[in-house]
Length: 90
Image (tube, rainbow, N blue to C red; front, side, top):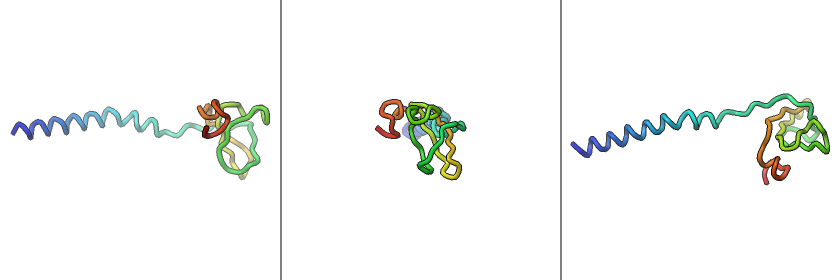
């Protein structure tokens, strides 16, 4: 009887832990909003780090998404690797 009680206690504790962590885990999966930008692109669909020396609207340290059909971009905001080395991955 006591081993069943102990096992039930651990199962209950595990369920509580999962419920406590789930909202945090789900929040980290939310996609970042991509704000329309004046930064233009010519290299086709994809993401790139901004470079104000090439285009002042392409803010240094920000990651942009290029729409190959329109040549327009949206800005995802600051990305650590764009700040550190100007690339999507350092």
